[in-house]
Length: 102
Image 1 (cartoon, helix red, strand yellow):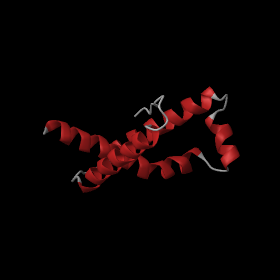
Image 2: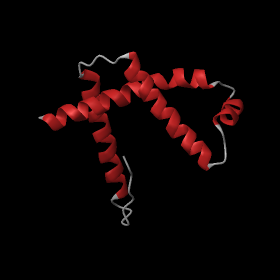
Image 3: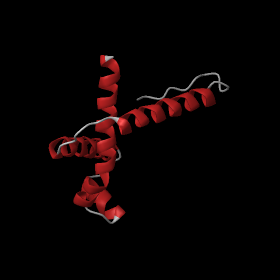
Image 4: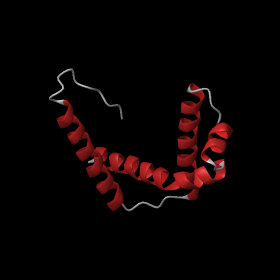
């Protein structure tokens, strides 16, 4: 989701508040969705997050190994840490798909 900033600063807090509300509603829908997330789905979600991170690091002239050294972690540990976020992303996509179907 992209965030745009209004030229009228009075509208900015409302748009941020509305965005937070939409995200909260989506997460609630995702949490209640009956969905079996397979290991393959979860690994694909983590792969997507790792790819995004690597692209962001590359823009800053860093590699994943450099980042891991700085953060005192390993790519494997980072992948493990990303699993809850990947699961929520999968659930949110599935919730959106269900909403669209209706």
